[in-house]
Length: 318
Image (cartoon, rainbow, N blue to C red):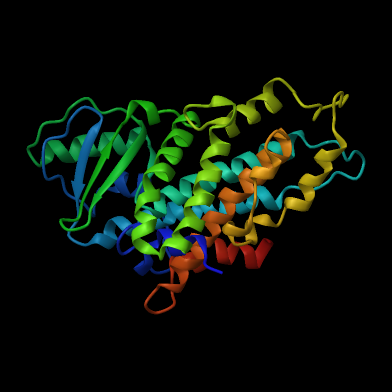
């Protein structure tokens, strides 16, 4: 049986597999420090570019954020449990499943070089200062969510805002769904026809779930999360009116994220919102885990940053 990663590994951010343990800070701290990059051009409105002489100057803090997100996803799942005094108490557990998938989707995008990163004000201020020092002009730069485009030939990294992605939840799911849709054709160039079809069908199954209820931005998961959190829907909060005994099955899905994503079926659960929601979250978590495991095996000296991230977390807590 092939793995999901077999169909998309060609999309990994170049040289990410060579990043070693252990990184100590993420992109924002690195940008704020300002010691390991230069500015090669004018900066546009909410669009700035930096360069490095060594690609790992950027990849090291970038990988720290991947570790941070993957551990947060697993920690969210690790905290899910059935309450002894009231088995119907699943409201917060639904939220934890959601955030595990939210963190994993970010992680997947970063592995693929499609990062959607929250750049804070201290980073923006430092970029402005360094741009001025290099004698270039600075446009109107604001903090917020930036896409990152990587030029691996010249070691240049462009950070830019895209309006439809500039929203912490809806923007993330829109970007993630667009990435999944755009990646399908390339799978056929990576694998034999039959195997490629298996991977693409799983991608289509996930896209269909994310666009459930005619959600054009692929944000069905966040819509369910909002219904549970803010409308207290589905009887998941006291007094549990409308609670369906079938919801108890979510606890049997707790270890799905450890499986090969290609073996996780979600389509049969369509129409059973809570079960469909949880299995979709776990499929996203499984994809993230599969990619991280594959990345770990590709480190040239078996010292991947993944070892000090999700693998270390699992050995300690999971």
